[in-house]
Image 1 (cartoon, helix red, strand yellow):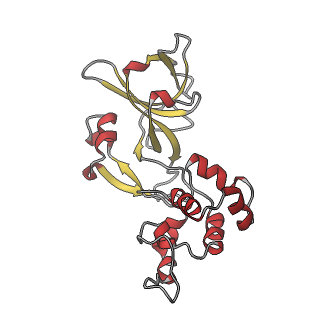
Image 2 (cartoon, rainbow, N blue to C red; image 1 turned 135 degrees about the vertical axis):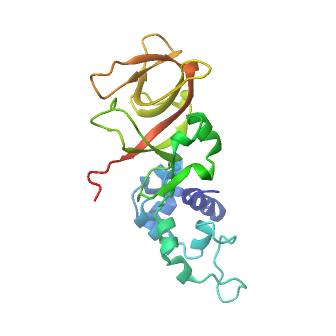
Image 3 (tube, rainbow, N blue to C red; image 1 turned 45 degrees about the vertical axis):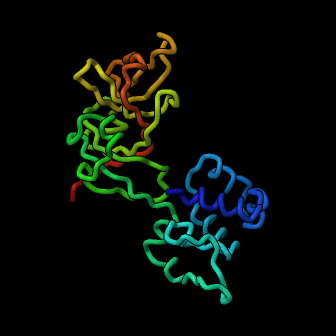
Amino acid sequence: MRNIVEKLKEYLDFKNIEIAVAERELGVSNASLSKPFKANTNIKTTTLEKFLSTYKDLNPLWVLDESPNMLRKGNSGQINESLHVYETKKTKEAIIGLQEVPFYDLEATAGLQELFDSGKPHKVLDTIKIPNLPRCDGAISVTGDSMYPLLKSGDIILYKETSVQNIFYGEMYLVSVKSDDWEEYITVKFVQKSEKGEDFVKLVSQNQHHQSKDINIGHISAIAMVKASIRYNTMF
């Protein structure tokens, strides 16, 4: 399923409208479309509203994958998508990119890689919705204090799956490391370059009482960038 940004790009390509021209017609800054189009991330709600109000033939239901028709037809056409459907709560949530990120029970899986590979419904405890959240693949609870005070045990992290070839050094990652054929060590750390060479990475804790550790990249079975975190301050 294509996301909203991909749909808008397809529309502009179909109409042969350059991105710079569209930004001028919308009255937005130069990066309002070009930046999210290039990174394939959500655009601002106000920008999307201007897009739909400027290009009135664009069917908002098609943007949300709720209609097969890219264009809305007028009185002469057989298809007349009613705008009141677009104004429903469900549509408004989808329009602003309000994802439903699955919150998984990591303990119910055989490991992080198994969770990434399957994502079976019975492992989903709930879903999380946060406005303007970067695209995420899932969420889990963390344990331990290695990232304290940035993260504490019980916090929820939301992650985007990636690979060791696409690591951005210095960022926080959810990492699964195989210590042998049977044991798997799952942790959240900053990933930095290792002095041991390109075959290694350094896992660094926020908590100064935890030592950094160099890990052979070949021992990393799964990795995901931490995009956001949630903490409960009270339970009432």
